[in-house]
Structure formats: C-alpha cells, structure tokens
Length: 91
Image (tube, rainbow, N blue to C red; front, side, top):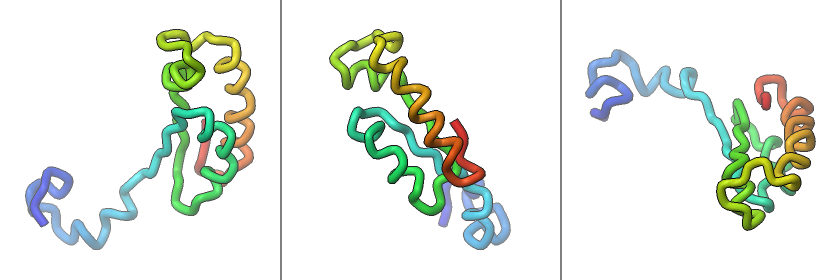
C-alpha cells in the first residue's frame, strides 16, 4: 500500500501499527446529532468529539451566527455528555 500516510510504503510494518496511532474524532453538525450525542459517543472507538457551532447555527437557519441563543444553550448539554462518556472522549 503506497500513500502519504505511510510515506509511500517506506514505513516499516505500517499496517501492523497504524491503528494504534489513529485518533477517531466525530463532528457534531446537525440538530439530529445534538439530540443523539449520547448514542453517538457510546460508539466504541471514538476518541474525541468536535461540535461545530457555525454548522449548528446553519441547522437552526442562522447562517453565520454561532452566537444564536439556541446554539449557545446546547453547548453545556453536549459538553456534559462528552465529559460523561468514555475517559478519552472530551469536549
């Protein structure tokens, strides 16, 4: 396998060790994802969560307004979910 991730096949045993060096980050960008955050974070293998306030604002019909009150009100909720999830998953 030759690609940039293994320096075009020059990294010894790349396929044997790659998974140990990968971080899986999910991005929450929709109202549906905010509502399902506990279920999303329960998926095995997720290392971190990123929430896109601008994307959430757009989902509320408030393009370019991440300070929209509904977006700001959702922040404590998803942070609490992230902190309560697996030890490695943080907001």
